[in-house]
Image (cartoon, rainbow over all chains, first blue to last red; front, side, top):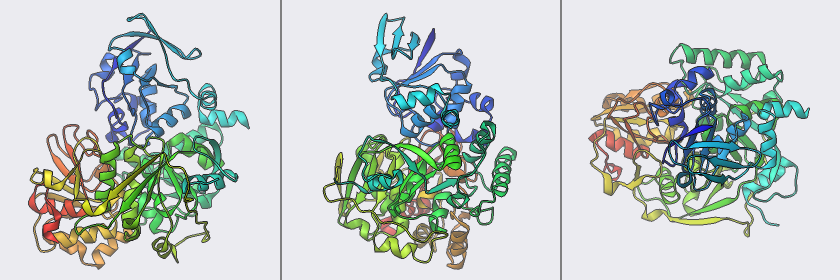
Length: 160
Length: 420
């Protein structure tokens, strides 16, 4: 079970997810320590491993820094659910083997603190708190294959 | 069947007669841009996965820029990793410090950008190179690693949007004002996943530098790429400049190519624009916002730190004193030298500005001009997200070099037209 941390915001950008002042390293643990810092300074203290971030439109816009995905993965975030994703961030997630969950109307369907159970194969989210079952937009097959292989480089290695 | 420039470039790179928006393709990459923040992790990944190779050293350009000269020990380590790799792989186009510059100013200046090619870079503003009729887009470190090792990347062919820039620019109004108006209209995700193609008579009068300011900011509307067709201005810029391969293919959009959105901007009706914190889409005409007090002025970056930009700023600042701290960042060593040779550096010195070495520096909150809490900076850069140039409690106001320079003199947002 994962707890939802809902930010009723559009355009949460990669500068907020991992500020550039920390880009002088690619050490995942160091990056994770500052995950979401400029959006919510309390985030790292309050979330548990496996918890889920829920946002509005255009999540991950801005810089191409994959450090944003590494920070989220390093902080043991279970998933990011957004109404839509910015292109480079979305692609970086797939390349890192991290399934970005696109869910139209996410901010109406999930409240802060809701307990969620995600079924990636079925493409559904069980909102245990509200007693609802929500369908999300599944990843296209080719992207799912990359995610299931653990990311783009492992996918390329497997193909050779 | 008709196609846009973007579709034609991608079709060529995929070895197909045609492609359509939404189609998934594997494209051959013609040029890869590598800098100091996103490339060292890519190098480490390749080593870790045991696929540590370079598909074609001639197709890779390396320049440290974000934190160069090294701002601290950790960034020095990043530079060291980049340097070791570039030397080990014997990359012919490695711009070491002294020749290194802000990537999106340096690569065109040094003749690495050709029309009709597929160009990728580990930086979101790689869309800049679309000003040359190329398909150019930003990628993350894993894509960068894959491109370096294999020379191939998958792409979904983007649908195209067309922006017709009609009329011409009034005195004091620049291409930065045009692109801020475009982003104001469609929002920061108005072009999500799409190609932004710019056409129209106003473009014809613009230099390559001015055009690059427009395509540079395609990402600020969520665009996958920005693109401008080839013409005599493009050719004049490229002639005698290209390094390595000097031939290229020019693609034009067909008259009946499909666009999912068309918008017309009457450039004659535009005023100087300022985008308020914290989104590039928060543009306001200067007549509605002049007088807002500033603490700093920053003139530089891959958007507006070329010699043309410094000339415009110096023209306004000449003989005056700046009222706020003003930081001028020529984006390449060549531009830095030109600024000295042309007497611009002296004008900036006399006015009380500081002129730095080429670096991305404070544009992304790295160093060389970081803002304290509560401070406001009028900046010729491309992003004004929360904390972009320093404290999360500071604010960035995006503007043209002319507006920034006028604002530096007055210490508040100011209309540059009265100084021209």
